[in-house]
Image (tube, rainbow, N blue to C red; front, top):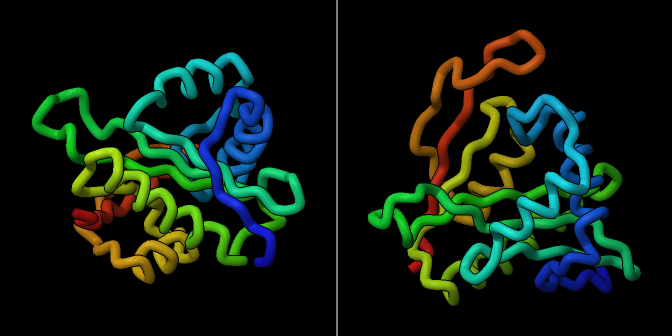
Length: 165
């Protein structure tokens, strides 16, 4: 995709980040969240993503079409070098390489921020996401069977990881 830029997110981006996140919730492809979120939720979430836990946005023609974040994996100090990741792409732009670009930039940011490993959790049926992660060198660690319930049905969740440093 031409003219795609990736940059650090700021507070002015939160409404669009929220809109894209809510699409992911509604589409049931990327999170066990069941209810859409509001701007207050996203503002609190963003305020917890300072310093090392960066949030990036992808822009095309001055519009944000995706975002990615490094999240705290665990509050235990032993895991300070491990980040969990989130990537969400606006519906109309999925499958066009935006996730790959965000993931590459997020990995570079993670390394600069002192992380040595990134982990993620994806639905076992999210083939598009798994393809992206495998293409970028992530490996399957295992599958948590019946990890959650979404719309009254059990959902299996795959854990993946990549050593980046």
